[in-house]
Structures are given as C-alpha cells and as structure tokens.
Image 1 (spheres, rainbow, N blue to C red):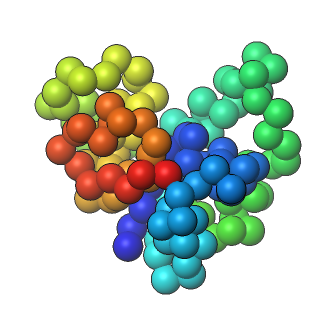
Image 2: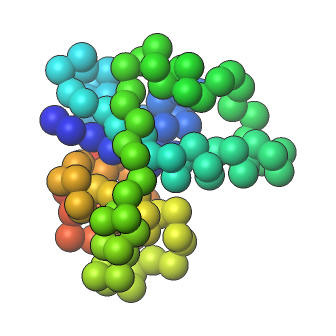
Image 3: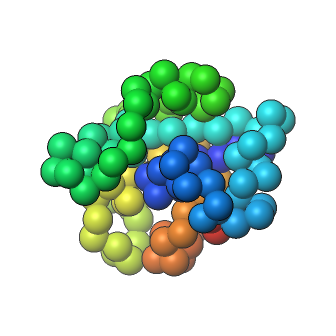
Length: 125
C-alpha cells in the first residue's frame, strides 16, 4: 500500500500511537507499505509548535527518516488539482493533502470525516 499521513495521523504515529486504529497502526508499521509525509504537514506542525499548541519534540525530518517515511514533494500539479476538488472543506492544509492523495493515487490516513468524503481512497486513523 502507498499511504499519505495527514497531520494528525503523523502526530499520533510519533507521539500517541495508542490513538491510531489497529488497522492504521498495523499498516503504518508494516515495512511492506510506502509511507509518505507532505511538506504541508511539516508546515502545519511547525506552525503549531511555534504557537505553543503542540509539544511534539525532535527533528521531524530525522524522525521521518528513522521510520522510513518518505517526503512527498509538493508540485504544481498538486496545487492545480485543488481547483477540481468539491468544496467540502475550507482548510487549505487539508485540501492540499487531499489533492496530493488524488494526484499521486495514495491512500490518505485521516481521522477527519470531511476528508473521507472526497473522491479519494482513505483509511481511518
């Protein structure tokens, strides 16, 4: 499987794995799946940290590398895909994750029920 972690799924994987569903934990931990992280999630985590709303510690890039997570580059195709998405959600971070999952044909691992309504494959956290 090729999975894209939304920001909460990434945070939970790193700091509170008990919050993940059994399926999400198993698939994220499986060495046979490709796990991708968007720079959008890194940006959202950085913003939350800078505002004191998240106490996730450590170098995110280093931790991702140690776990074998792959960075998913943000491309013009991803940005342009947002225009064709239904107007189900206004959060630009989430919409970009949906666009990336759509363009790259990835399964978005998310707890956000609104994101699960988009025409993409999802896996609940």
